[in-house]
Length: 270
Image (cartoon, rainbow, N blue to C red; front, side, top):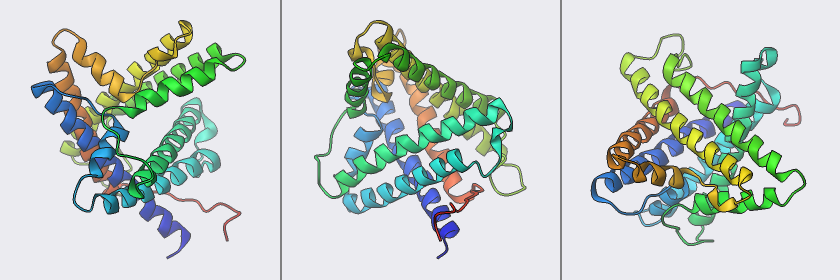
């Protein structure tokens, strides 16, 4: 199997793994909205797979997919195979790909540790604790407040990009030259809208942590879902966002099969 074929396969497995995780997150969030209980983020959702039949095998496949997806995104960000750097939108897209790549490297490492029983399956939202830890580390650095605010602004930029995808619903990379069916476009729209809201909330948490010099105010997906549940009509809000996240998972599974994936081989790989 050639490099391009391997990377395409890894990217598709990555889309499928991401879809599975978001389906689990959406399901648990919807269950909490209806019945109450403990919310989970992406790492918490992965932890539940450890208890499933053949769960560690499935976690191993997910880890491989996340790693391949990360390499594909980072390659796209660094080498720009689609020549996006010609305008500001393209440059932001490359930054978003870089952030996505880094995020999926973290997920790949966490999933690998779960698959090989190097760490116990964590419940709830371990991502919130991680956000507090790295926020505290950033605040201790020279210019830490500025850097943390910058991270929050970048997360808002990602949220804006997700919102644009939800609004425009072009998804022109699905299925070759044939436009995506309307039902796929609406699934993507709702999914990206939910993600836009979550990224905007996480960005706000990070900025508040910076401005108040309090890393405990930082949070991830779990904290965002918890904040939604604490609002007036919180159960309804959480249920709507939960359905949106689950739909994003479904859209990722569709992407795993039909998305056009352009892979460029780095010069240092023979």
